[in-house]
Image (tube, rainbow, N blue to C red):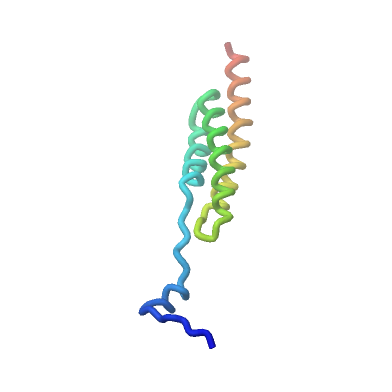
Length: 98
């Protein structure tokens, strides 16, 4: 028979996994995606690219069981792509006026 040493609180730690936390890249991606719609064409394009890059990183990090933010990162990716389209439309509008 195999004997295991018992430490106080050992069974409590095994029963409750550590609380999952949002990743910093998913939060940065969300903020950059939202800000990309509030700025001009060039800044919006840059922020949309930042949202896409950090969104990809957030999705990769969310595969860990200790991390959250997969849905936030995915939404930020989608918003980043829409932000790029919006920035292009803003740029076309600016060029046609000037």
